[in-house]
Image (cartoon, rainbow, N blue to C red):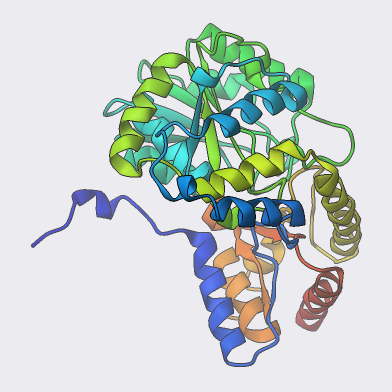
Length: 396
């Protein structure tokens, strides 16, 4: 029997491919250092663990709960959205999901009709185009350039907009580049979307991870009725809770009602214990996040300095998330390394020969680059970048 034709359109997660290969090498005893992690290297805050232990003893948490989420969590999402993001919403505007990835997929399924087009700036997080295709839409890639700090502009959007354009994906700070748009840059993009009646899907999971005072206001600050704006957020990145799988959608009532219908048939409620964990994280504030940020910023500055000292490596000094996106095209093409023709080959070569794992730029729609996560220990960061520098020197 045949499986769905959709299988020919969907590609597996490229970030997982390099991670799986690195895992196999570690199991063989190789001293692999991974720069591919899309998650903080810190434990979930201790107060979250204590609250969860207590919640696990409460038998009411062993049962089904409302599809849209526990009231106490939704109340906390409303409170912190206003406190941290300047977004004024009600509980009816919130749907709790099984992580940000699930929230994005559910959102696309809620608003896309077959053939609708979604504008996705490149480099992009790998799930965006796949989620669009699963939902029956067509991803339209908005290519960006290193010299423009990988930022889109309204001229590009004008040139790509058609009668089928439905959504613009927006993420600042960016995964994979770490680039943050200024307030003025963001406002130009928001105004374009509002004037053209295009949804903005604003992925805000990295909103707290900025390091030099440059921040992008949420489009929901301007679109207070949420007529054109859908916000995706969660506890994974800022609270080091990737495995707890709690995210949420903030949208108008029509979108939330549709998303609830989909989620009711897909997963029902998010696990109550995970929701209690998310509630605890939000309730207790950002002190632990600030400590993480101090470490991330120290590592960011170190990595920028190290890459900047390596010949023929170009780098944007990104100020958000926990990623850098260096240009390695000199070494990943031009026949500089035997058998290496692109950044996938280059990353495999680094892993095979020097046991350092980076994610190739092709995964994010951009050949000639690699994503470097600095969400790893200082010792591993120093050793890993030392190996990278050694690899380049030995080429020369």
